[in-house]
Length: 338
Ligand code: PHE
Image 1: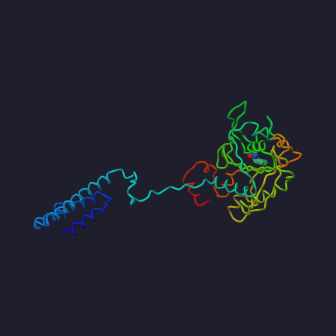
Image 2: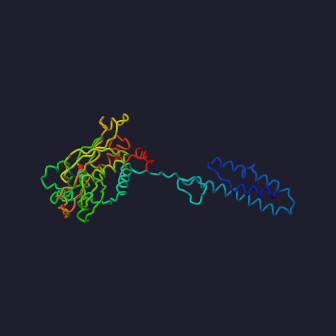
Image 3: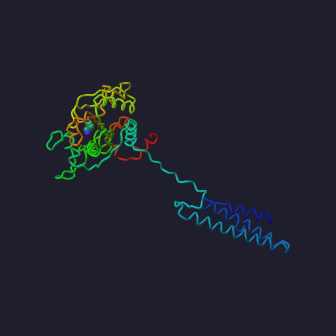
């Protein structure tokens, strides 16, 4: 009998319950009128007196542990189980929601990596800019009609403070503070007062590049661009179409040959096979002068591209607004990207 009771005590210690029904079954089994403990007490009466002391002690122990187990389990179940119990190692772990990188960051990191590999540093600047860094130093004096190429959000008039319309402003800051040779890229958010639609938004992201040294030529620009498109898209065929930017001369738009292998290619390139991806040119001597760099000694190239557009292209996203809505169902799809 003693052995049996000892085993019962052990069983009680290791018992646990997940519902009130289970606790009740347990209670009836041990403490009920016809339960185990009462039946032991009936047997107990007929024991020899010399055995009664030991067995009596054990029986009391059994009864106490059954009673306290019932209490313990009841308090446990009625307490707020959403609060993790630190001492209960058997509880299942709480699932952790793992986030993912935003497609803009994925593309930005990739472009930064590509240019870092050929010696470009990363420079950043303020999003609220003054007139000088966003316009005047870039060969866009006051009343210059090309200021209208980018509709500007002004924060303050006279003195003018505005939300930068491109990250070329960072390049001006960089040239003011660093001597050539310069190789830098400036990623960042830019703002333009445009109607929001599937194709355009009033803020987006750019990466602009700047390279200034002795004898930098248009051929260097073209080779750098070819390297870039090969690395990013796996496509090396590009074409440069003459264009106009106030801060570069000559200026060009860069198209990459995407191909026409399937229906998506036709859609993306409007049936031409070519995709426009950025603007570029040789830095205008006036800009160098404005930043205290001697244009007779140094020359350079610059380029600028929109990260959002490339993210849309690479991930086949058809509405630019998705990039700023932060809908988790959208963002979750980029978990497997790096
Ligand atoms: N800053 C230009 C834009 O925002 C892009 C550009 C940068 C063009 C450098 C030429 C050279 O549209």
